[in-house]
Length: 297
Image (cartoon, rainbow, N blue to C red; front, side, top):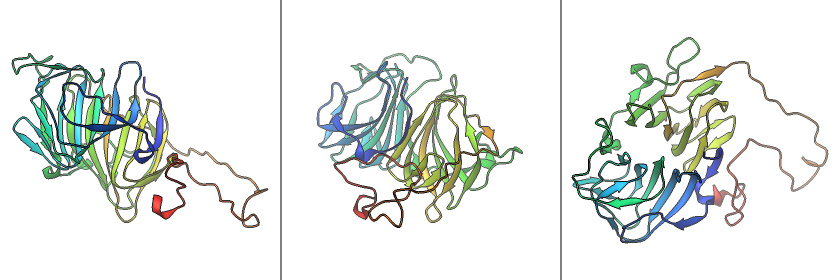
C-alpha cells in the first residue's frame, strides 16, 4: 500500500538513479509516491542523455506521459503531452528518448523489472494492448457530454470542467485522464471515493481543503479520504493528470465544518518576524528555501 501523500512539490524530492533495466543512457527519477511492498510507483523522470531500450515486457502496468522533449516508441514519435501505456505482459517496442526529455512514469502492480523479448509475446488479456496517444491533439470533452465524474447533488454536471480520457481498463475500471477546469471553477461539497486517487498539476492551480496546488505539485490519496471545496485559479484555471484504481464515484458531504480559531498570544502585528497561519502547502525543502521567497515560488 502506498502512503497517503498530500501535498508535495516535485522540486523538493530527492533525485535517484532511474530504475530502468536493459537501457543505454542516463536518467534520474524523483519518487512522487512509492509502494515499498510491490514496487508500484509514480515518478518524475529526467533523461540526462540520449537514452534507448530494446523491445520487451514489463512486469508492471506501465504508463509514460511526456512533460517535455521527445520520445520514440516503435515507429511513433511523441512530443510534449504524448502518452503511451503497456499493461503488464504486453509487448512494448523499442523506446528512444532525446536528452533533456522529462516524463511522468506510472507503474502499477509490480516494480521496475523488464524482460527483453521479441514481438511474438502473447497479450495477457484480449482487451489489453499497447496504446500511444498525442493528447495535445485530442479534443476536450465537457463533463456534460458523458463524463462519469463531477456531478452536483442533484445529478447535474458541474459546468466548466473538461476531460481527455487516456486509458481505462475494461475489467477493473482503472483509468488515467487529463482534466481541465475553467478559471474560477468551483465544486463546493466535500467528497470521498471508494477508490484511490492521485493527481499531478500540469498548469494553473487550485485551492482545496488540503491547501493549494500549482504546476509540479502532486498527491496520492487512498480511498475514503474527504477532500474538496475546489476553487480553480481565477486567471489560469487548472489542468492536471489524474489516475484512479477504479471508476470514480463521488460520495458527497454537505455542511461540513472544520474550524480552528483563537487569540494570538506570541505572534502577529506586535511580534516582528512572525507570520500568520495559512492553508497547508507542500513541504518546503531546506535546500531551496522558504515559500515566502518569490524566487522559490
